[in-house]
Length: 355
Image 1 (spheres, rainbow, N blue to C red):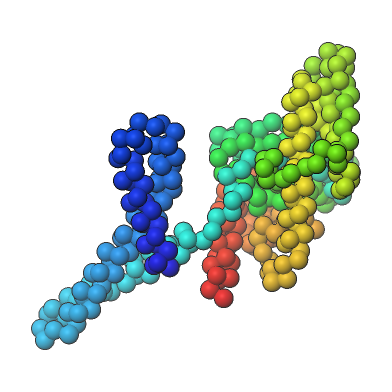
Image 2 (cartoon, rainbow, N blue to C red; image 1 turned 180 degrees about the horizontal axis):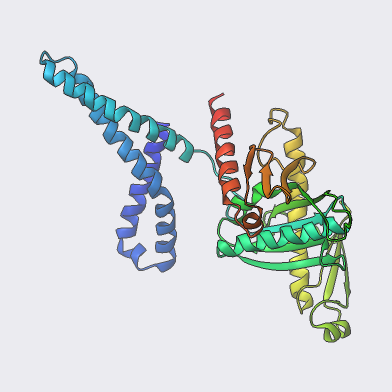
């Protein structure tokens, strides 16, 4: 670990020297690139330097334990008792900081929510979930845009697909993939009986063309008049697009934009993300050593969270955490779950690193 940290510090110092050179300082593009990389390395370098300083102080204190003076020995022991906990804390923190980052974490995401069991009530719950994630995105200053929706006619969704664009969107929302369950009395239930309904959530990183290559000959593209906002004008012009990926059978339709080009670009973005997700699921399935409880594995057959209206309770089954403030959760207050899920995933990665 120390060798890796020393190389990171060396790179940090090199970038600092480069940024002081006139030819770099006058080149705004290269200067920005150096500054960005340096700022990413700075937190771990600062922790590393603090760790080295404490380690040096501990060595000095250790040497004083061999002195003949009882008072000096007592002071050395006291100093070691003070420094050792911080040294251990920094070592663990540095180990976490060295963990490889998911290269997808900074990507925008495409969220797909589909009604499951429960008829109209499942569709209403799908609408509740879509609003919850849009509120969450708003709290993080991320932008959202609906790419496609199939409404139920009673205010719900059979399916809704939207983009969340913002720094680190996938790093947070990736934990939301799975089956969400709601327990409540539907508005149509005259006897007051509690129903259980479900909706599935898929969070896909938005992939670039360089990430997923698609052979144009594998695509069947159809254009048609959109039925969304813009109505009559959009019906006169074929602005909506439906793309079939023949090898996989995937079908993507988009009609949320006023131009055919924009709808086609968005449909291709959804298709790339879905194709990437299929390959990722295959890879995860084939990984025999993956733990059954692994966070973020994308296993959508597992119920990950229950929203219980009668008890005002939301329970995340993966981490065994319950909160009794359902209204605030549906208003986008999800960080208490996501923080714990991220911490759990990190702990598992550290454990697997040590095995």
